[in-house]
Image (tube, rainbow over all chains, first blue to last red; front, side, top):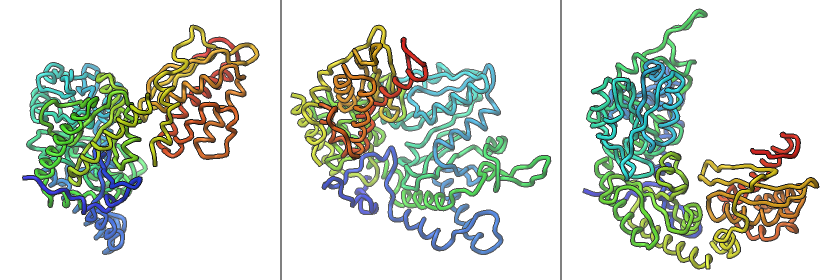
Length: 408
Length: 151
């Protein structure tokens, strides 16, 4: 069952751009925010704002309640327990936290981390740095031609020395989706943990961390209709409990003396300093909003729209679409127009009110593999509709005509 | 906003028929730059004589029409100019794109890129070659003299 696009819930989408209707097709970079999220953040600041976990007065209790309620909401959104959710600044910080804290615990000479060349830099660099700092090896799983990671290819590189398998659930470039359950089985068979970069999946499809078999799972608020500067790390309770803090400071301690300190329980020991309380409230409001629409329905809507988008732009002669050849399973469609650099194309589309991303999408190793220095990427969400796609196609045809004319 | 204001014919001509593409065997000055946000890559090689006059200027790289056309036009513009004059061209060009008052007299065809100022996200594409030039000159002052300076 598909849904009608929820355009009217998002105030920004009423904006005119260069005299045109706005066709926002860059949700893989960041999503727009529904009124429900904006209202929740405003309500928090107008009614409950105080610092959390320390005041004895009523207002502080309310702020603490809001913050911990948000943790509960986010945990149930992905099928986890509240104490398994650490609030962070976003996916990047979540992955860095795991790589540093868990990496320090398990990585050393003779061990390895398995990841892929298709990862976003934020799921590549933290693992490279952690592995190299501890004398461990970084291994890369061979990619299928469409850029995806197959369980068979993964099984080729994982061995008894593997401590961590770090993979993206959904690719921000190729629009492919990894079989995370199969990856978890392979990792667990060798005693390794599976750390999932879910920045592009949690906002777009139903997620159950237990069903996936994920040991760690990182995602951002701003890509799921929430505010920027807030995200979450899911960590299996027993794994988090055995990890050291990364940020030391206020809020995360049990007892401090001049000789040492003891840490709060998880997840609070990982949240040193005053957290982004309003961000957490906004992220939880986003999760509630998405759940009220229905994650399965959102996923179906996006897949249907992405298939329509890929099919329509393929009809434009000279357009090359990357990623899956057949049915798509996510809202990301990456493409190029023959003879026009992706940047020039994005500028041309912008003048018609169409926002797409152009560049290497923070995936330089993958782009090298594609032999494309730059590509354009359109990505859809629950507020996009066929009108957005048609506007993109019309702008694409216009851009093509323009560049062919001036190139004479 | 019209695309014609940015993508003038002369720009597309330089993009498709770059004037001074290649590498020098023994450049006096050389600098490579990479624009990490978009993936554009550029290397600029200069042959500078003892009087400080640019005798040859070539570039190699990949990128959008704006960055490649600017590189083609800039290498055209600085040939036969002193390093000081070349530097003034670079400065004037940046002033033009930042909408500051600019000395247009020595810009030549580079002036055609003026429309890029209307697209702030693209200014860095147009100035990539100037930044490479400045990096190359800086390597000269740091390296303290002539010879093959790789930056």
